Length: 119
Image (tube, rainbow, N blue to C red; front, side, top):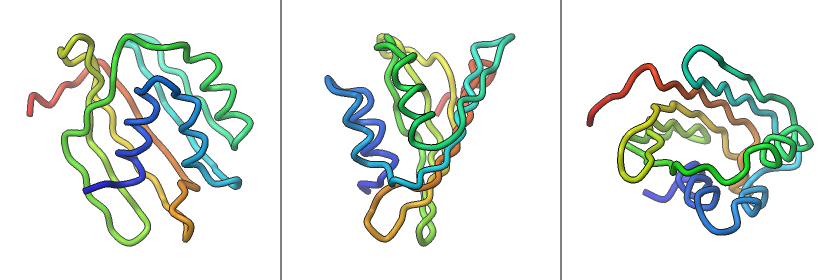
């Protein structure tokens, strides 16, 4: 299954992560709640805020791995984990709505190091 979210993670983990912007609608609204344990940050807003999120992100040592995914109409859901050198680091849960052009116009994700699914 090739979903918009799966494509997003493939691009963002690739050599040109900034190209993930090509998968986003102009009217994007998003929230990324990113926990590293004791601290959580919520990056949220529209396209400009997403660009700021990408700029501060650097090139992390970890990559995204989709463990389970489903879709219903325009909504996609993903359970995944980020890994470093093949080892699980954190779990993430994401939801996206895809517009009629195949672009993501709504995106919300939560990431935490506190729970791993061991699938």
